Image 1 (cartoon, rainbow, N blue to C red):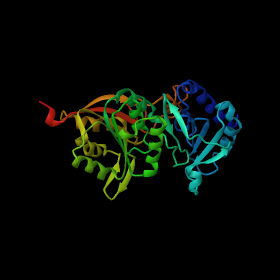
Image 2: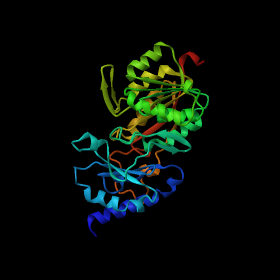
Image 3: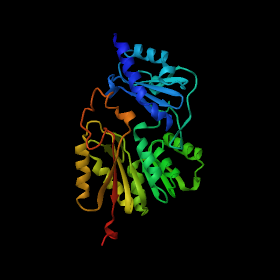
Image 4: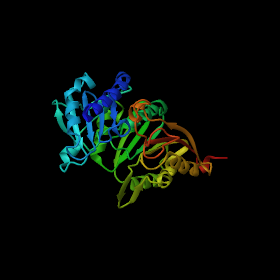
Length: 334
């Protein structure tokens, strides 16, 4: 058996495990090559499109990609197109994605009854993160009647999920207004009240300071920073610096409010991240309530996983680590 046939067999096996997800959502991972035997490739489904993420040297995965195109109907019977994103291609157009099969791309998807606007070529990712599906479902179930602040919102899927779940106010902030434009489209797709949804483009540090100075309080704050970024106003570095970001938003959380913290640093172990959170709970003003697991289509299944993550994520089940914390205010405790 040649290597291409072996890899295609692994992809078929992985894709077969994902069949139940098609009953719940048309946005899920068909194949996670990082863990399932071919680290140069991820295959995601968005609506009727397969999105291939090629992380290898340009051209190296071409035989596998050609085989996937040839077997598209087998892997996803109702898919109509394939978009290829090549991380190391010298041309940004190919890094953001080029159609290699079919002619159309979806502009929206539905997940657990909520519609989200899509722009699969907006960025090197797909404008919508599959690994946080369970958190969106959690937000739908827990945000009714709450005031929600979604920081580092990107395209705003968490805020939209909160709004669909009955939040009474949702503020979404991100440095890039082009990303937030998709949040507005998603809000409109769900016929949600436009008066309770506010977009604040700008730097996290400046906006959080402005909200603090205005004495704004929120019942839930979502903190989902990028792995690393630097602006004139401050630096984001998830490698052991989550506490600093948490302390920036703690004054914005109402008494008995919720803080959702996400850390996707690949080389930060689950134990280290949990230790950092636990150190913040020592004062008694924060408490860890819940861990949100990552779905199996992202983590891989027991009989498809061939390689574990580079750092042990336990007690989380994936390097994308999601924790729900409860916050208490000094001025409210007796």
